[in-house]
Length: 253
Image 1: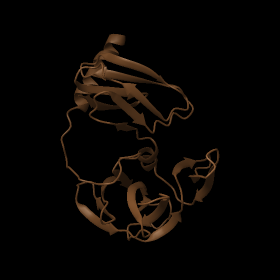
Image 2: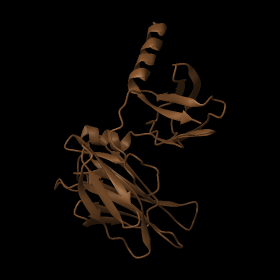
Image 3: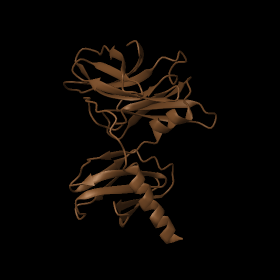
Image 4: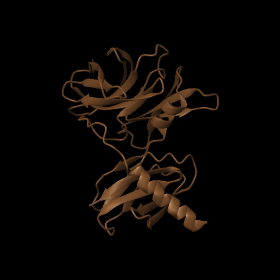
């Protein structure tokens, strides 16, 4: 039985690397912690790019055609850093595409703001002086946005809970909450995984060579959201990592 499973894994690997490059985008902004650059609306995947200099977001459909260019307005002295939570009904029910822009002051004290915009470039809401956030859902399928704010007292963190009136489809929730961010890729020495969201469960990271040989096995603690793995001893080439039902590839230089 184990041999059959092993051969099936090799077949899966062979199939999964038969991809065809559809399109290439160029974007700017920090690559953390949410580099999906994709979102789902009406069960269709879409893509976006950021123009950091001009504070512009460009939206592309599933065929990679540009269908919207949005210019947003930020406070004086702030620059765009990243885009978060692109959806259509999470903050409002008007079916317009919405997203949260993270911006930061270019000079001290480097305050960070999160502003919600819609596809018309209208500012819907502003979360001021926020250092981080988390989107959660309670058993009644109600979404909560929890923002955190550091204070001058390093031992204290102020967090606020906002009740959101919107909804997400299963596919939207999956792409927002269950994506794993891997970096750097390619890598020479250390391979990092972020946004693990173990939900209080211990997991195991397994890394396989392209031939299907397991080369690394590492436990992931219950509350671990990020891990680092030393891969300096591995030979150059393509490797596959697997955590539960999730898997992806990386390149060792």
